[in-house]
Image (cartoon, rainbow, N blue to C red):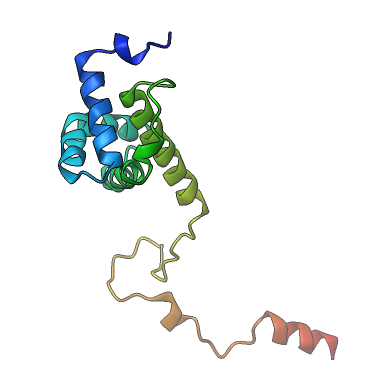
Length: 141
């Protein structure tokens, strides 16, 4: 059911007015919009990405997108909170995709259960014993 702007609640009307002022670069309107919607959008993001630190970063990205794209909000197509929620949801999904493509950090600490600090595998690796390539060359001779 798609309501026309005349059928919106007072809250939706106020959010739409704030968005139209944000589109003109009004920082006070942006602060008002942020105060009115941050907890809802943060909840949406947390459901998708449960890591609180990452969710906070995603929320910031979402509001940066809102600031940049406020002029593209069309009240005939959706209500303000629906539009804002879709931005937050898309940012959260994008953050999950980015995380899947990030290179994992490799530890050089031995995972043998030994809790000795400073047990760096790179310091233990050099050996005088022949490596696989040398053994292969020896066998070929």
